Length: 467
Image 1 (spheres, rainbow, N blue to C red):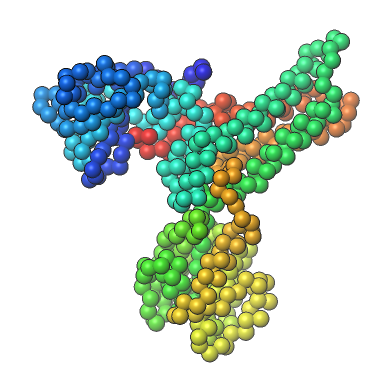
Image 2: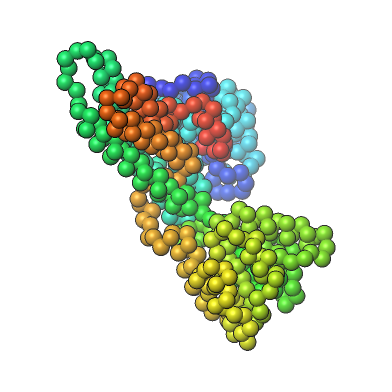
């Protein structure tokens, strides 16, 4: 496969620490490039005195990193091109996991002529050298950042090429259709048999249907990857912090009978049956008493604006109040689950009236003190996330906003083409071909075949150095 062009020097040998910095059993310094083995020859002394450039690929060797003195006792692994992560010669030095020895090994490799890798440059080279496409490269980052087992399984499916194969298949059919249209332009005056218009329309309709399925699944895919923001709000002393602690299954937030104990928004993440959920306990919304509370309530309102789901808490022991009404106005337009707390006490809240005012039947009566109906709260959160659907992480999901945007653009162009062809003789082949080229370009952008350089740089800048 022909190499794609890059703005960075592909002849450089790059190096980086590829494991988290800090104390650990092992730390890895990774080299990749034409001179990786030559650099290793200069600094690695094996037990049998054989140079790394003589080692067979996929072999590991015990020895020491040294220059004028021994720096560390290591295990060195050699992976020769093209059967390596980057399709270049790769050397990995397994050092002791302390920051001092890792830094000394890294500095020595740099002194031998390698340069420090840019963020994501190892994976970028794997892409530029044709080992993986861009969707797979982005999946590498998704695997690293996976928050739950479900999100990791989705990312691994993309890394193995599940989404790429789907996009590639659709693009190939689209290019076949484009070839038919261009043939009509090039050979319009010659007696050549071309595919009938109905056949072309059927192919385009099928492509559009498949793209639509991917777009519709994108919201669920992004939820699996990123999770949702779930904000707990309500008046002071309704049990917001208690609910937060129960959802977290640990005492993260201070709980007291004193209203206004929580002065700031507190955010934590939970794994709710495979879905990453960022839960936020907000300060009770009321007329602020001091400058600290002003900032806390302002932050609460900011979280409410960004929330995907609101847990609106009420006190069954108290009547519906103006403060409750003000909070309801603040969360207007959001998905709401009402948690009516203190069901173990005397009831003064008109629940039916609340349902009517809030226009929701999603109301759960609970007792946080007795942990009653907490499973119903979790079930309601999941029900609102999935809209009652049951999802399989093994399915092909779009989990990337860039991919969704490219799919939407491609589908718009295909639909425009279908509408143009339906006009009959007035349809211009040149216009049709132009729209199909744009659609093919957008699908190619997902795979990295037609991606713009600035987008490419932006993607890999999100990676850590060493991957």
